[in-house]
Image 1 (cartoon, rainbow, N blue to C red):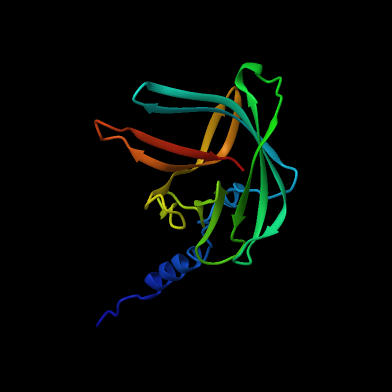
Image 2: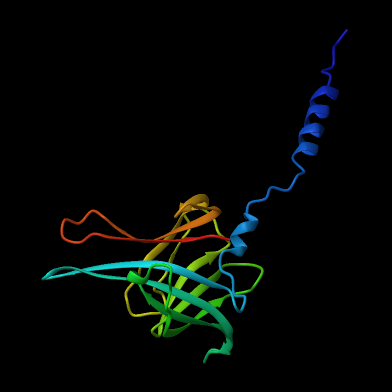
Length: 197
C-alpha cells in the first residue's frame, strides 16, 4: 500500500496565513498631517535666543516672537500662499509682551494627496522647504533647493516624540534636523525644529 502525503494541513495553514495577512498596515502616522497648520488667526509665541559669533565674540539677540497666520495671496507661480505676520517683544519684559510689527512672511503647503509634497516658509524672500510629506523617519530632502544658500540636507530624526517645554508637554511631535555639522574644530552648526500637531 502506497501512502499519499496529506496536503490538507499545509493548505489549511497557508489559507489561515493568507487570511491573517489581509489587514492594512498604517504606515503614515495621522498626526503628521497636522504639523503645519494654515488656519487664519492661529498664532505661536516663541522665545528666541539667537547667538552668532564674530571676531569680538558671541553676539546674542534675545526676544519673544509672535507669528500670526493670516489670509491667502497668490505668488508668481500661481500657488496660494498663506501670509504670516511676525511681531517682536523685548525679552526683558518677560510675558508682559509688547509686540511690535516685525516682518511679513509667507507659508506654502502642497495640499496634494499623493506623491511627494512639501511645506515651505518664505522669509526675507528666501524660500526654504521645511517639511516633506509623507513623513517617515530618516527621510531627507534639500531644504535649500529654491534659494542660493547651497544644498542643505534636512531630515526627520523622530516622527512621534514627546517634548516638554517650560512644563508644557507636547505629544506626537516631529523633529527635523536642519544642520548637523558638529565634527569641525572651527565651526559648529546644529539646527533643528520641532513641530507639534
